[in-house]
Image (cartoon, rainbow, N blue to C red; front, side, top):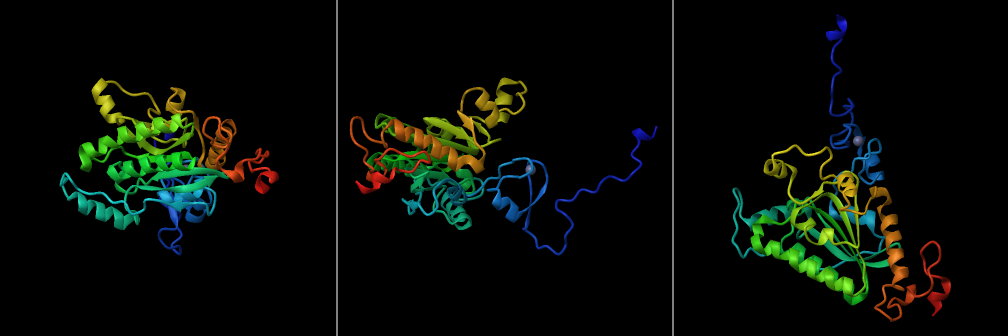
Length: 317
Ligand SMILES: [Zn+2]
């Protein structure tokens, strides 16, 4: 019965092709299909696997380049840093030391990059969470920078676009972290009253206190394929209800089916898709104008042409 017995040797598994002449770090193994991917190929594919479509986590600055019009970004609130009013110390480290280590590793002051830019030519106030900075956790700085990004959108008549990539609230800031949920949500209600759109983009993972506040309050909620989207983690839920969870639980495809999000968009199409959505809001609000008033953006005041740019006569007015 040879088919019950392995007669030939097992196929030897390697993490990367045997090319000893290539230096380390040029290949990355896909977490989705196991394929060894050349770094430049990955970069060309915006850090998604060309074979299986797996979306790698990327730093906020990398995602910024994927999302906004080239050369349009101006950073705001770059110097905000967290205090340590609770004098928190976890099992291994004081909070200020943990912050310093994360700042050294990422080159960021906290877990959020924010500023103004355009997407498809439309003015946006944009904020991107960085999972590599303490798991993208939301403390007082992340919350404050998001609050300011929303206020800036209202003052300058911009749409708000926020990219979430986070494990949730930052435990080192306790209740100060949880307060950010109410603060950001309240400002989004004001934004809505001002008739300005908010597009929420969920990137793996978008969890807990962030999903339970601003991330799920988008006029349109878009997620990347395969992103983890939920409140409590699967293990906690399984233990609480004492039941096995369905396959693909809390992945974006699952939450789309349940109606929690509006669409799933591949990273390659993200800028075009968000631009398309902004175009829709732009037309329906006559250029992000307040009720009954002309567009506050003179260069965009004319009727947009088919490709989304302003008609030539608008530029001469
Ligand atoms: Zn893959």
